[in-house]
Length: 73
Figure 1 (tube, rainbow, N blue to C red):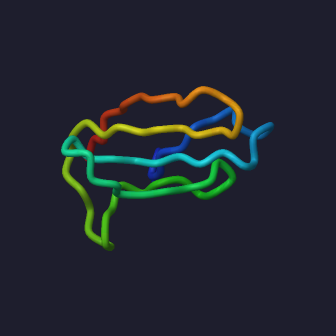
Figure 2: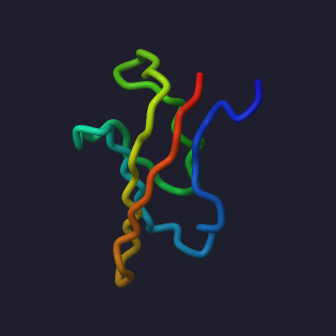
């Protein structure tokens, strides 16, 4: 219904950007382009628990951006 996917806004000028989402152990859970539908909080078609998750934003010829967010169920 509301906020069903996670995405980063404001990346329309960087269509070649790639966003990587990791769990707290560093396991890669999802890779997406900014134009995609976003991440639905699942891994291997199973919903992940409420927790903190980390992301890396890679834009060619720009510094790597790292951050985190909370997934709430």
